[in-house]
Amino acid sequence: QGTIDKYMGDCIMAFWNAPLDDAEHAVHSCHAVLAMFEALDVLNEERRLEDEAAGRKHLPLNVGAGINTGECVVGNMGSAQRFDYSVLGDPVNLAARLESQSKNYGVKIVLGPKTEAEAAKAGFATLELDLIQVKGQSVGVSIHCLLGDAEFATTPEFIAVKEKHREFIEHYRSQRWDAADASMVTCRGLSGGLALALDELYDLYRERIDEYRENPPPIDWDGVFVATTK
Image 1 (cartoon, rainbow, N blue to C red):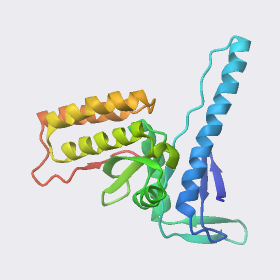
Image 2: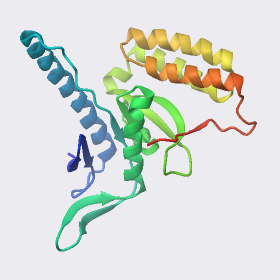
Image 3: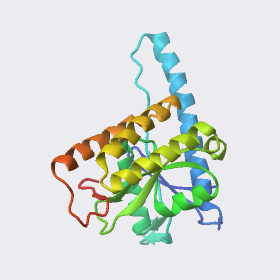
């Protein structure tokens, strides 16, 4: 139930709740992106078989997604010579930044805070990634990754991952580095058993913790990571 806005190189931009009202726009965006990755898995398997039959090296297609929710300006924009039905606003810019961060955190889907709140209410499987101030923004925001639907979220295995990951984030923000290390080891094992591919995320935190041990953050550190690249 989304609207494909435009294609920008290898990027597809879409939005929800316009031109038709959609009270469940955040939830529908999450369903859409999960369906996209299911379709991508099918496509990659088809391509793998084709490459195998042709004796070619298989290079799977990998994509990242960023979803954000907020008030925007939507409508026909431009001039009489050229105009588009599109959407503009700070939430749009943040969505683009979140998509870029998916690669840095080693996850497929990054959610902004309002989207995550609606996704969590609907029961989707999410994990907190970080507090981050993206390039072009002046404040930090809480970002999460989307890992599965409501059915997956209720499995004992995912519940165990979510609880231990929450514990890890709490230790990290409190600068309890040894406790964070211990929790992270457990997180790796639990998430690996579910094939959630979170090793890159924990590698990132491993590097940060090593750096903070050598150069402790200031006393008033609020846990926000300031991104220097888009």
